[in-house]
Image (tube, helix red, strand yellow):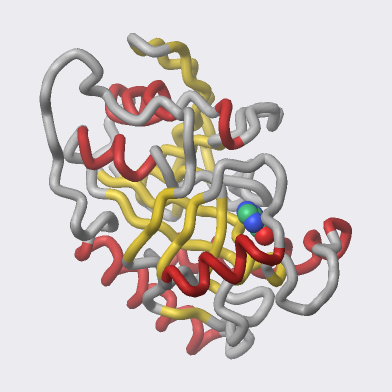
Length: 240
Ligand code: HPA
């Protein structure tokens, strides 16, 4: 079954039908999730910040979330994230289906393998097949809605948060090769890989990264971009 992890701006999945809520117990804690139908297909939905939203990015129980999804029957995961731009040529809102990431987080629980030596391959952090299917869904949706803007690759820089970045940090991230900045792709994607669970992401740019416009990030202007971008994501997931 397909599982969708929703983030900021995507804490509820409008369009999901026949929703059954579940509390799944795992070795790492309990997880709230929903099982419903998207068209004819059964889908799991997990709002990573909780329902109601209360877990900041550094306090999300990522291990419980991944194991909870597996216990509920997830076979693949699409992770939705709101992000800032790092590449100044990206617009707001714009969708990015990242193909790479750089992890700037610290102090988060990073692995299921705390007490044994186990190294996973993470050369390509996002699942190639799922990414391709997402790109094709985005292409189909764009034929219906020409406003949709998406990029079929990009480097996601994952910061620790919860504060936004300084202008110098965004400049450094650009030099490192990042295109977008968010706070939740790690360790989420890596834990999915440790469990052999195919994982891909779709990100919505909701603000220009710090300093890009020589201005402070305007938190209150983020909402409109988020609403529009997340409605595109909903269409793409439905098409997927
Ligand atoms: N930085 C980090 N995470 C984010 C941002 C940002 O500018 N916007 C949305 N999530």
